[in-house]
Structures are given as structure tokens and as C-alpha cells.
Amino acid sequence: MVYVQNSTATFTLFPNDCGQFSRDQFLAIARHGCCTEYAPWRFHTIVLRVRLAAQLTPAGGWGVATGTATALLFRSGRVVLTGVRGQHHQGLRQALCSAARRVCRRVRAALRAGRFCQNAPLLGVYRLTIRNLVSTLRVSHRVAVERLYSAMCRWRSRRSTQLHTDNIEGNPDDATGERVNGVGFEGSRFVGVSRCCLDLSTFPALRCTLLLLMPAEQREELQQQQQHPHTVSVTCLVFISGRVIVTGVRHLSIMEQAFENLDALLAAYAR
Image (cartoon, rainbow, N blue to C red; front, side, top):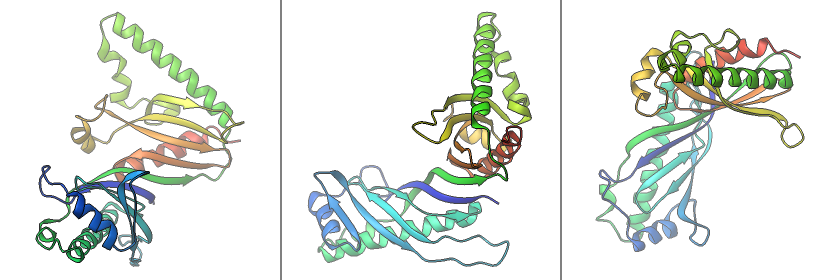
């Protein structure tokens, strides 16, 4: 079961893109807002801390979302929300909506306290979008990161050579044929290595960005955002202890698929 350790989402407080807080309104939010920080000489945003209530559910429910979320409020009304945890897509979405509504209520209360009552009713939560998810996978064995790094470098070099050859021969579709058919690295659905780096003297983990074959239901949604419409990039930190931090994912379904394929991939490189 995938448990999201951290998430990043964005939303706007104004119903259209033309709205913006005036300087006096922005200062009133910073002055009268609850649990706010504002240091304009360092960063031109208001930092709001929102405590999340625990959501205890029975087994098979929506999961748990606890802790404190942080919101960055810009004068344009755009808010970056981070620190929300959850399990299952519906539970995570509910936790994000709850935190966003709390931020909106605090901004409304601060505007009313600053005598800007005419602007408070116009605010709401609009265009809430998940931008990034972070989760942790722990395998039952230690990982030989040196051998894994060498294999990734060889595979990346071989794929680059094949892509260059297919483009010269005028068959660019053949270079992505393995991606579409799902023939990947070590039998997994990882069909490419975008980046890999290993220097144990400076950082005790293998840093890599893998290309994962997307589920069919996600291809149309991400087709306009990805360089390859059939793949999505997944960034991983692989530690020798068997702990893997996975980020760069926007959908829990893709995170679950990444976990399944990482488990199968790392099993071939047990220390």
C-alpha cells in the first residue's frame, strides 16, 4: 500500500487570473493572519502554517492525514500548499481540499480583521492541482548500488545509440517501440534512464530518473505535458540499506506502478 509522505499542490483564491491583492490587503493578511510569517526582504510571500486534524478510518478506509501543512501565499492569489500526507487518491484529495479551505478561511478572517470586508466573500479555492507526490519504498534486502549504477549507465548508452541509429535510418518510431510494448530494464516497465548519478563520497545514495511506461488511462491526460506521451519520469534515491525515496509523480496510480517495478528491479541487485 502506497502512503504519500509529502505532496505539493497549487490553487488560486480568485475565480479568475485577473485578481490580485493590493499592497494594503497583503499587509493586512500578514498582520492579522493566524500562524503567518512575512519577511519581504527574504521572500515575497506570506507563509501560513495549517495544522491538519487526524482522520482515523477503519481498515480499508481512506487512510490518515496528520501533521502540519505549509502554504505560500503570493499577491496574485496563487497558493502553493505542501506537507499534506495521505493514503488512497480519494483520501489524499480530501486532505488537500480540507487544508486549502482552511487557508482560504484564514485569509478571509485576516481581511475582515484588516477592514477589507468587501473582498473577503470573493475568495475561494479554485483550480486545485496536485503537482508532486513523495513516497518511500523499503525492500527487504540491501542493494548493490554500484552494480545497479553500472547497469543503468550501460543501458542508457545502449538506448542512446539505438535511438541515434533509428533516427539516421529514418525510423524514429522504432526507437520508441520498446516503450510502447513495455519491454524494459531487467524485465520491468522502466523503459529508459534519463539521468543517473552515484558518488558515495558526497551522497550515500544512487540518484536516478527513470522513464516508466504509463498506464493507459493516464496517457491522454499527460500527453500534452510529457516529452514522450507514453512515458512519465520518476525520480528515485536508492540507498544501500534498501530504502528508496520516489518523487516526481503526480498520480497515485503511477506511484503504485513505480513501486511494483522498483521492487522487481532491485531484487536483481541484492547485496
